[in-house]
Image (cartoon, rainbow, N blue to C red; front, side, top):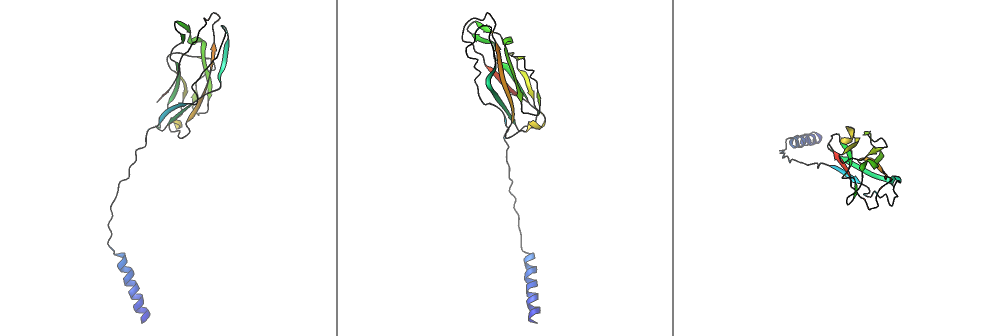
Length: 170
């Protein structure tokens, strides 16, 4: 009989806990994922050093410039290169037809360089990403550039300079 009473007591206790009052409140969790669309260079110097008229130098810089593109937009993008101007020293000029870019990619997209591409002041597409590279974080997509300069035979002496521009476009 004790067992029966104890069993009924436990059954009643268990049943009463099933009907305990419950209330629920909800909190909304939000996050804004920042857009990342960036371009970084591992170095910013392209120094041909001293050259004589008629000289040609290539593979400058010897290790190349690594251009890393990162995006989380999910969109295809392209990398372009241009020269701000011809090489200049005051009124003296070395025309862009003497200045070349070339290189390679570690990406899965299309590299447009031929190895003998001349600079222009308008941006030239050098690489087009795949759809998958629209989200390529954290490492990004690496493209490497080297440069060649062929001085004309009659080039005037001077300290010439130009700016090379890399442009990332979606």
